[in-house]
Image 1 (cartoon, rainbow, N blue to C red):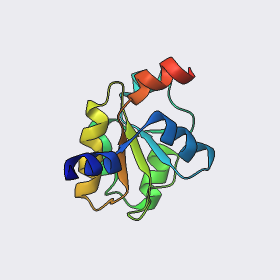
Image 2 (image 1 turned 30 degrees about the horizontal axis):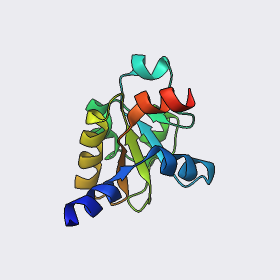
Image 3 (image 1 turned 180 degrees about the horizontal axis):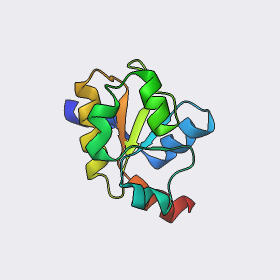
Image 4 (image 1 turned 120 degrees about the vertical axis):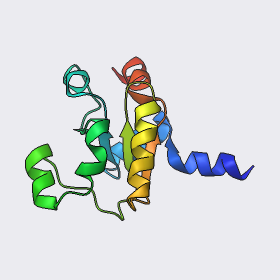
Length: 120
């Protein structure tokens, strides 16, 4: 039983993501490749390919800003939501972020595929 509650804390549903975005309470990170993200992404998402997530989250804030044109997430950010195309890379990125101390790192399990089907 404990596993289910842990998973739900780590995962964001489409409904919850909509709510977080409309209230401005989510930082969204698209961990797909630049090509994938250029073809379409969730509004407001910052594209950081999964291969760069670990180094990006360890950058100085000014370097992060210069490279990604966005403010670097803070360790204490509550809803740092990662997503990819299907869910696997987003989960991997969330685990990396949590390993670096980002306690609010979560994965949008439905990923861009679900967003595009329901919102696109």
